[in-house]
Length: 336
Image 1 (cartoon, helix red, strand yellow):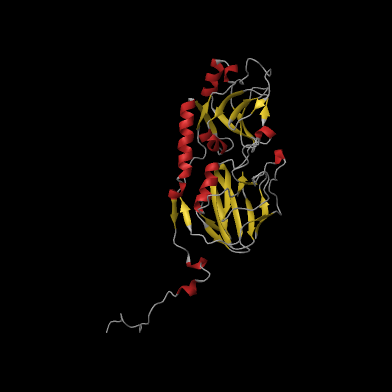
Image 2: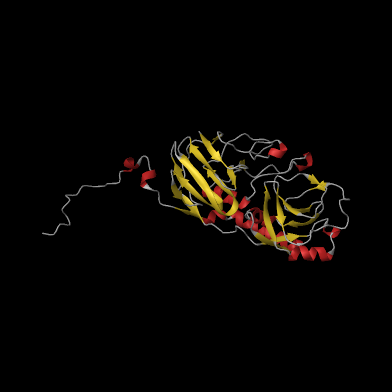
């Protein structure tokens, strides 16, 4: 039982929650860039375990179903088709053996997710199926790959309420241990600047463009390398900012002007190429509260799931249900 990759946009991979706890050994946690979209798919299938989905970047891909099962799509606003027929995002659909699934035409956001009932069962490394090429764990997906999944499961057709957080223009940040290396005036200019997401982006980070002078710091590059955290905004030797994401390097020597709060990392990652954003400085207390609110929202996501009536065409054993009960003449309602 596997899904055949007919074609796919570069950078796609299988992702779950990642492998936290290994950064001290030089391996960052990785995992799905958009944890919210990943959890939406799990909630649809009532899955509580660390199941894996396909993370698609940029343009999507086409897939051939190996055995009848159920799928759904979440994340970036995209067109999802089954045998050429459009399917709603955030809703479970049944695909039969040999059917083609296509995810394409992303209109908002950058990362979309294709979920399968029971999750994809690719090889696990250090307790995770997440691909992290830079760490030598797993691979990116390519044409001709086969992605195994569980045999057909009993699934209730359902949909989930979608929340539009794509292309969020305001991203919250907190000061970090190296913010003091930048002058107060420069930090104020950083907060007043309108940034644009560049095409130079991947699972490691997002380079930001802007007009005006760059953000050079007073100590140049004379700092020691230290651990890099998810969401750190690194200023390189040219004074250009990069937001560091899940597959970032474990340590780095460039100073970091600030850090995107944990509750907003998935939002900044979903901002499309050439889209604009501003940073808003918040306190550590505000960041902690925002994270708690985000985690609380994830924990009750099941409440956003609505069960749907099944399409009779998807019920292979429809005749076994005995839908006709009793016998009639057929002329009971005829007018005499």
